[in-house]
Image: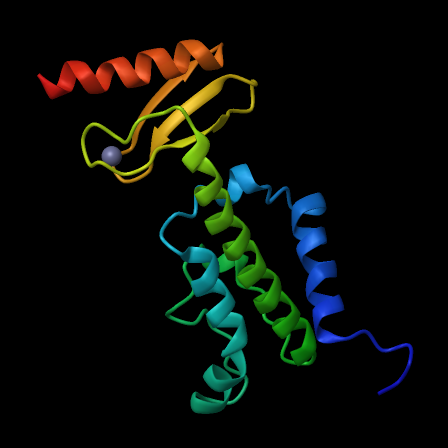
Length: 161
Ligand SMILES: [Zn+2]
């Protein structure tokens, strides 16, 4: 291999960094993709070549597995490595998201009172503290974290009656 050539893992790390810095795909942002969309998007890029080969020549339509708006689908048939780099970075993002979920185990928020799933805890763009269940779309916003925790956890008791 050419000494100047970057390895797969280097390219993926670079793309992941770009996603965070240029696209703003922070852990808070990625937490919203709670149905595994990031991995599905990765699969779409990873198998883009297969889609092209098994359909009509020049086919660059959005693959059925692509989970986002079709305008976000940006294949680069002329640069297969670029597609694989994106796929790898999306997998890394999904791993980070799942790790962040695990880290939530330290949250003081109780499980969602409606579905029993762990709520997302983070901040909105105004810096307010947010507790949200992405399964039920239940959301609570407070200016202080302790207030948020108190209200969210108290609601669970109220609903438990
Ligand atoms: Zn819920």
